[in-house]
Amino acid sequence: MSELKGLRVHLIVSEPWDFGTIHGAGPFSAQVLKECSPEGQQACAILIKLDKPIEYKDLRCEYFVASPRLERDSLDNIQQGVSVGCGLTCISEEHAKSPDPFDLSWWRGGVGLIADLSVAKKQNS
Image (cartoon, rainbow, N blue to C red; front, side, top):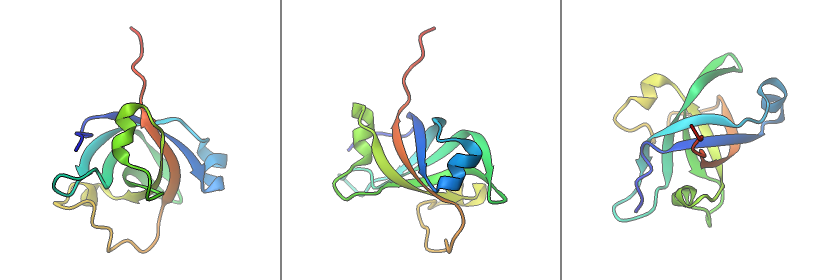
C-alpha cells in the first residue's frame, strides 16, 4: 500500500466539454488530503483539494473525491509517474471534513468530472 496523502497532483479535465469551454482543460493543481485504502490494499479513492477553487454550475468546486475509471487502473500508479483516468465527484467543504468524505451515498447529482491525474512535477528553483 502506498501513502498518497500530501502528494501534489495535476488534473487534466476531459469531460464535460462545457467545463473545458469555460475553464480550459488544465492542468489544475491540487493536493491529496486523504486516501481510502482497505487494509493492505491499494488506494480505491482519494480526496483532493484544488489549489484554486473553481466556480462551475453555480457551485464552488474545491474538494473532489477521485476514483479510477477503469478496473485495471490504480491510484497508486500516480506515484510512479503514470497518468490515471479518474472520475471526480465535487463535494462540499463540510463533507470533505467529515469523518468519511468517501461516502457518496448522499450524492444525487452536481458536479462530476472526468480527468487524468498525474503527479505534479517539481519546479526548479
